[in-house]
Image (cartoon, rainbow, N blue to C red; front, side, top):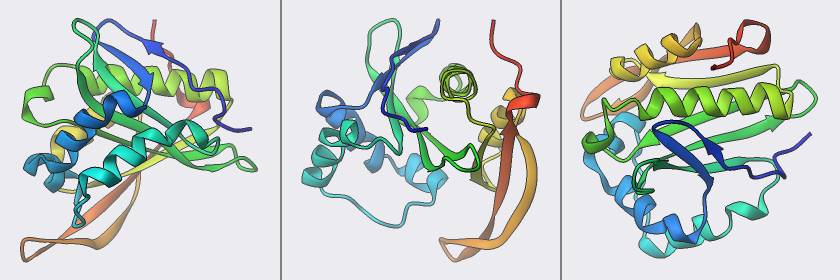
Length: 183
C-alpha cells in the first residue's frame, strides 16, 4: 500500500491536482499568509527556493499524497491537502489541509476537499483510519471536520505556544466503517 497513484479528484467547487511546480506561487502565498500561519501554528518560515523545491519533488514520494486545491471555476490555487505518515501495516495515515487565507474561507472548498480526499483514501487506497490535529482556537476547522465525520479522540494539552499563550491540539479521526461517501 502506498500513494504511488497521484490522482486528480474533481468536485463541483474544487479540483484536487497532484501538487507540482506549477503550484509553487500558490504555496508561497499560503505559507506567508498571516491567518494561515496562525491557524496551522507554523513557527518556521520558508524561503522561496524551499517552497519551489518542495512542490517540484512531491511526485517522487509514494508514502504521501500532496494535492493542490484548485478552484473548479478558474483553476486558481486555493490551498493544499496532504495525506502523510502512511502506516501500511495499520491502514492509516494523517491528514493536513490548509487554505490560502481569508479569500478562500467560507466558500465550501474545505468541506468538499475533505470529502473527495476521504473518498479516495477509504475507497481507492483502502485505508481504515485517517487522523488529524487541530488547534483549540480553530473552531471553523473543527466544525468542518465534525461535519464530514471526524470524531474527537483526545487532547494534547498545551501543545502550541502562540503569542504568549498555550493552546491545546485536538486529536480527531474518521474510520472507514463510519465513512459515508459523497454522492
